[in-house]
Image 1 (cartoon, rainbow, N blue to C red):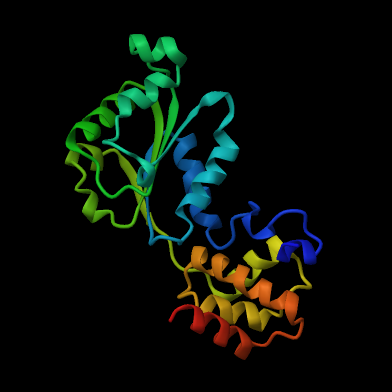
Image 2: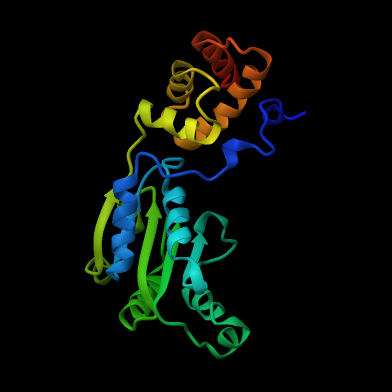
Length: 230
């Protein structure tokens, strides 16, 4: 049996999408930016919750094919904004370069945008093919955005690490109130460098240990996770 089946879950609860904890105000900014038709940049380290925010945006605004989401980390070649938008109109849109109107473009984990793509984003934004653009990145400065794009950006906001209390809430939303103590969860978060994605990965190791030992302590977690980093 898998560890989560031992805890009466049918699927891995750590992979289940739950509410956005700790970044609620930034999520509101993302919603507002879309509704008001603006460009927004969200800056944060890997694992800080950038993709989680975009997933929440997709849930809220993703009906009727209105969203074009691109994970820049998974691109095999140079980003092509024109192709992405044309494909949203189906095969005929792609063949005849017919672009939809009022699209929401989400560019996730962007490290660099070419000057050509910047000009195309500006063109599609100004001509109402793009209603709103949200870019997430580790470093706003390293994007080297053109002045014309900067003038169209309503706001740049930065994600911060969750507090220990918020990290506990993330865990509880996924696995409930009765698995692991708050202290054990906080220890796992501390040993994850307060990186949310690493924390969730480490929680899986901790939960496997918990299945074997329901009296798991903070010291047990330290030994488990510190051994895993060697």
